[in-house]
Length: 199
Image (cartoon, rainbow, N blue to C red; front, side, top):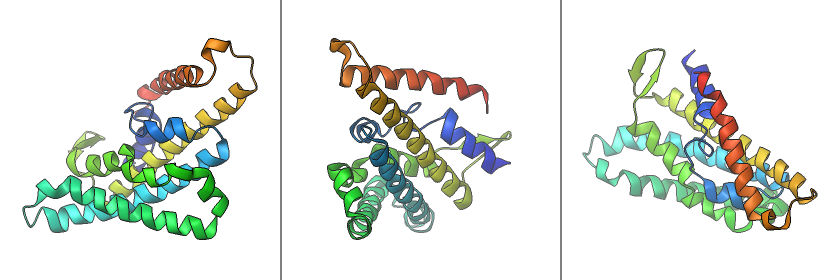
């Protein structure tokens, strides 16, 4: 039951983009086309899940035993940067068209605060599910990371679909482009607040 609560909470209730406002740069930058948004979502999901596994292990088996918790942020950023480089190389070989469409935003996953934010949340916060306050174990951490990435993907894909429709809609001239995109993002954030009664 804990895993279901983590999934629902991370995807809908505490959506990493629309509730916690992490990862706004790729959310606004890569959301012009659904294909690009889905590709970015998959890359972020892979990096976020792997980064959470590696950083959780580093935290509890290296940094804490050696009393080097002060190196947490630097270590996590280095891990994320290495994983993003790996994803970039794999995408360049497997799907050059997706690699080209993601452009500069693929290396920006390194500095995507959503990826770093999830890795830090997993090791620093205590979560309460079913009345128990506890640190997430490795399984719960991975589920939380994947659910957060799915929430990111859901938000960016929905936003991209809406933006594609707005391109062909008759939007008043002062609202075209970024203004209507920001208004739409705000309305989406309000809509996702409706899920807060679920958990």
